[in-house]
Image (cartoon, rainbow, N blue to C red):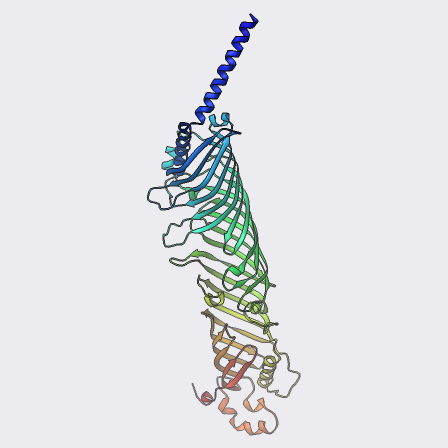
Length: 509
């Protein structure tokens, strides 16, 4: 009896070995590889709403069941770019996992993800996916990839990010998945670390796929943007669909600067924005920035420009009671800002893409007012003090010094030229109404206008000159001013030149 049982057990064992061996042999055949390819291909086609092609596919059994492939492409009819494209992949697991349509690990090298047009197809694909059997994945690890977002408008440039490393945990297309990623931002070049949740995947409309998480933007080098300098770090959170992400966060730059002046300034911002990941456009709902010690509020957009490489920044900017010297440090090459004061400003800001430095591309238009203005240059401030003394009719009063000034008016900046068509400058005893321009490149001044003094011309000088000028006081009285003189201002900010326009002295309106 025992011998018979032994023979039966040995027979069962041999049968099992033969069955397992046959199974392994079957798995190692070209038929099995083609079968797996068909299964995976059909699954990916249903999920990406496209056609799948794999250049080469092989299967190995030891130490685990592994399927390796190269040049996998998913493409849609009528679209030139595949979505996605994988240079090399390997999916592995136990035979039992394989039978259950699951893999414990997926390694992908050279992934390119294309987010393409497809809005409005989600309902159609939802019906097609009812009979699709899901494939479950454990850890998915991606290296050396690219995320390429193709806009609706073919004239606009795609948005591209380098995918240095991505990890997905317990992934399936039909549910939300935890992820962690390291991305390379192209310009300014910086490393972005992010983690959160992704999915479920919207097969017919990838841009509708939900995503949420937090990010850290590491030490971006602003030198990559022509005309800017310094380093930028940012952190925040995001959530929504790929085509409408709500983002909020903070940015910090310890050494923000314009190449025009090369003066580093601390810049800190908090912001709320809506990002269209399919276009790369950003709607800035609110930006609260601090430059040096000056607060800046803004809202606007960052959008791509048809036929141009790069994006255009459009903002409405407001500053209240800011320090004028903080702005001058960015624009003027000087160890000390040429002027200080309190600034109020409202302006429309536009910065288009292009090869020129930022100050040359920048366009501004608005109104401003400067209070408590003082010039750092002794030469300039002495002229202002002298103007106030003469305007008061106290030309010899040395106690009138370090006089504060006030500016105000409209302005427009374009092509590196600041135009001030209606500038008003005033000190106690005198007022100047000017129109003209200031060049950011060479800090050159070119203004013309009128000087109004409270005192008559004879009281602007002392001694015998005052007596000689008394008879001509009436010639210079005009529109309620004791003295009205047409003037010109030229030179530079650090070395201004003030003069009377003698051709207009006796001209009457």
